[in-house]
Image 1 (cartoon, helix red, strand yellow):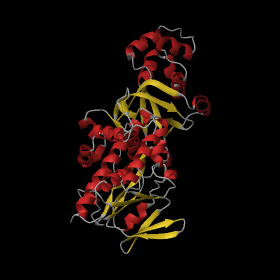
Image 2: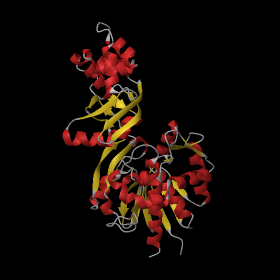
Image 3: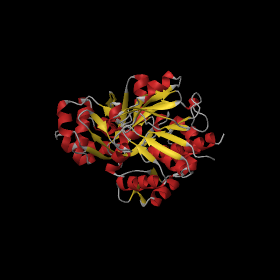
Image 4: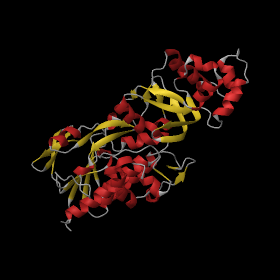
Length: 402
């Protein structure tokens, strides 16, 4: 097959993975990105330890994507978590399984992996053009806005891998939405995913406990019950345990106007035991002393009980025990999408054929967070971006052979 020019718009994980697959087949590939450097969100994720995938059994892994799990399954099966590990190690980055089952590079950084990846792409002939913001098509050519003016690029096939709507300062600003909608593409509105929530804290509580972690707790919502920890912020709550419930809480707020996260502050004790131990305390003692001696609760946990409990419940051991085991934190709203780790929404699956090509725009493919799916943190997001990038690359190869 004669060499074809493939344009990939977006230099994040999905776009770079597609570029790797296509260039290894001998195609001329150019990656265009609006930012001065590629993979900025990827690097940001690596600052706290790059969680590239998860070690759980594949069937459970593939079901972590909610309503989009059936659509994503084939792509994930073709690039499973074990394949992600092998790919990273092929780039010189050894990985390990953490206590939570999450998989990280041993160096706990993204930059060494990205350097190795970019070196491979360069060796395979991939060109990367930065500061190129895509602004649509003109007579079958791609239009880019660059520091030196408009640029028009001819292509044989193109991949849009422009990301969702979270962290817009890193490039995924969803500016593409209006252009695709003008071409009749149905796009679900973006919402924050893996996000924190606002809570109406009193000023004293917010000032005192902002930044304080709640450790060794469990939390319950319609998503289920999970152990973990989260953090009190000046405006509400955030952190991994909150993110695990974020989709369910966000949807409940949208549908019913109210939602609460139920927190068990003492998961190792039963309600009955707590009630007995609290009843043994001197009723004249302070609440702080009663909580500390009877339940081992102090600091931010005790502050949270005082902040949220009805005053009448604090003096009744049975009521106080029930609150400790299921303390409802009433939520006002999700934090803005610009702060969210990821976004829900995007191009609806009905707009794509089985090869990630837009039905209404033949020769134009999409991958990554542009598509309508979401997942919890834990390596699922990044793995699905890799997998859809590879799946779109295969679709492009099939298209070019026609």
